[in-house]
Structure formats: C-alpha cells, structure tokens
Length: 178
Image 1 (cartoon, one colour):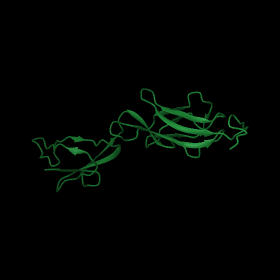
Image 2 (cartoon, helix red, strand yellow):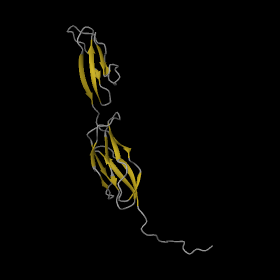
Image 3 (spheres, one colour):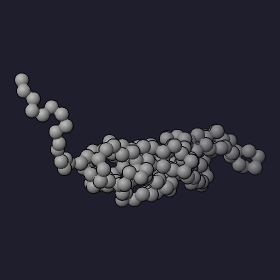
Image 4 (tube, one colour):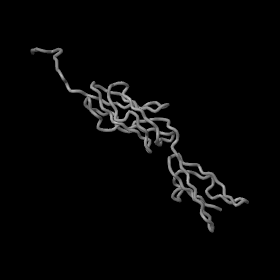
C-alpha cells in the first residue's frame, strides 16, 4: 500500500487522486491518476510507503485559455484636458475558472479621440493584468477607452476630460428687471 499526498502533505492544493492509497499489483506498481486543480500552481506529489524510499513527482497546473477581459481598476477618472490619468487603466484577462492568464497582449484605444497612451499595447503579467496610463486630448468630454484582446469582447473604460472656460457669453436673460 502506498500513500500519496500533494503539496504540503495535506492534500489541500485542490487536485484530486482517483485513489490516494493504491495497493501494488503483481508487478509491484501502485497506480492512480491525479486531476490537477483549476488554478495555476506548481504541485509536488510524494508517494510514501513504510520501509521504502519515497518517490516525488512535480507537476504544473497552468491557466486555461483566455475567455474574457475585464476592468480591474482605473475606470471613471476625471482629469483636465491634456493631462495624464493619475491612476493606471488596469485590465485583467481571465481563463474559464476566473484566474488571470499571463502573456496575452492587451491593446488600448480611445477610438480616435486624440489622447495618447503610455503603452498602447501591453502584455499581461503573471496575474493576468495589463496596464497603461492615458493622457486626455484637447477636447473635453467622456472618452471611451477599449481594452481588447483578439477574439474577446473588449472591456470599456470611461475617462472624463474637462477644460477651463476660455470665454463666457450671455445668451439669454440679460438686462432683466423685477
């Protein structure tokens, strides 16, 4: 009989064995299967049996394919025209289990509004996040900024650029008396 454990010995990394205490067959082999957890992690599996040398196996569970992109932070910032946003626009690319996917290029665009990005394209890091700063254009208003990945529905940030009044004019209501 062999005992199998994953990770820290508690079996708590999220994977499952088909049989965690298999019995050896006629060839002296103890057989089982291990299903990796849904999260990205490195796993060490140790096989122990009293009186015998332990065997250790290493496995890596990787993130699944990118299926969606979402806004993490930096949405709804309000800044003057020609000004860089104080906070980065941060988007996260997720796998089917809502874990971040690394190494995916995220493209940021204001759809021709005239602003600029510190990085118009940014790869996701180990946490699945990509970020950029945005400098607003000369024109005030609400700017929609898309964070896109090929094959996925884009996430849309909103940044409001405001300007200072350069001239004031009376349009109605002048010279009223009561």
